[in-house]
Structures are given as C-alpha cells and as structure tokens.
Image 1 (cartoon, helix red, strand yellow):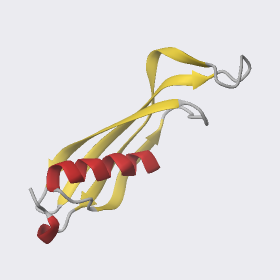
Image 2 (cartoon, rainbow, N blue to C red):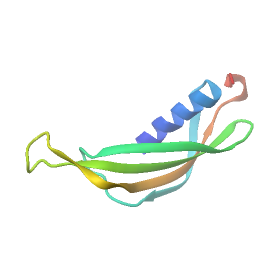
Image 3 (spheres, rainbow, N blue to C red):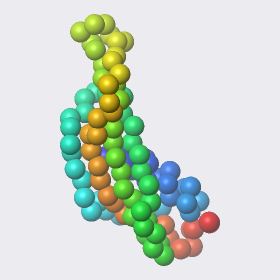
Length: 100
C-alpha cells in the first residue's frame, strides 16, 4: 500500500507539479502474497482527471523472489511477472497548487 502512495505522489508531481494528498482508495485487491525480499514493481496511471481530483489505478507485480536456502543473497527471476495486487484511489491537488 505504501508503494501505491509513492507512485501516486510521483504521478501528481508529473501532472500537476505538486505532491497532492491521497484522499482514499475505492478498491484494493490482494491477489498473491508478497514476502520480504521479493522484487516488486508498482505501476500506476491517472485514469480520470477532475478539477482537483486524480483517479489513479495501480498494479503491483512480483518479478523475483529470494532464495535464502541457497545463500543469503540468492534470488530467482520468475518465468512470468506475477500480478500480486491492484487498487484504485483518488488524489487531490488543490487548484492553487497546480502548476501545470
């Protein structure tokens, strides 16, 4: 969830020149477990833009997983990225803070 917030911050900075404020999630789905040490990529895109609101969709993919039974720094790349979760949320950027 924290990574979704980080992606939302970046998207608001890119679109408005301001971090904005994450107001709420409208949906969150946990589709596969993530564990400490997993290599994860979170993707996000603005799907709707209002006057001050930005609706954002997110997807989290696991690309690699650690192999501590092999050694402390071993990891394996998955054959196919695994969709671990997705969410939709809304960020708000006040009109007087929008620079783009």
